[in-house]
Image 1: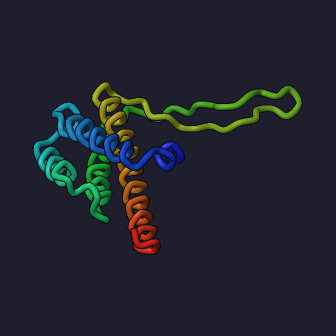
Image 2: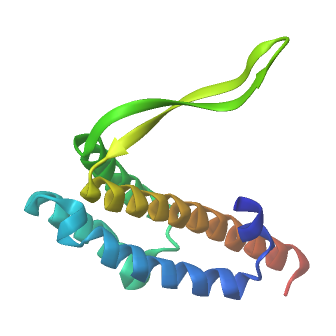
Amino acid sequence: MTNFFHTQPLEELCARSLEKIKHVTDAATSTEVVGTAHNQNAIRKSMNTLSEGKFLRHDAYEDLNRVISILAEELDRETRDFVPIFHGRNDPEEGAIGTVIHERVLTSRGEQVAQCLGNLHVLREMLLILGHRFAAERIVNRRFGT
């Protein structure tokens, strides 16, 4: 996914970032995802900072980190259990070849929180790449005087 953002034209990446901010703000501030009113206010405050056009600040992703940590706590509350799942194959000579990962068993609300968290991680990656690309543009423009 990261390579996709690096190769997108800058204008398209900006447009997609703005679109993603709107989508994630709506999802992250919904009552199904945030839980308590305190969490909802904290998330709304952080997301409004991004929505007000401050998504290009050097610390914009730190606001997202606050939202991600709040939702990660909510995800932990909505986790029913962890189930080990084997990814690999069973070789007759060498035995089981692969890895065992522990996947969460979530409530229906937990599924919504997990989906929102995934979108927040993508948005944070987009904003980081956007910031780096703007910095690179500034350096190139200063160096070549355009």
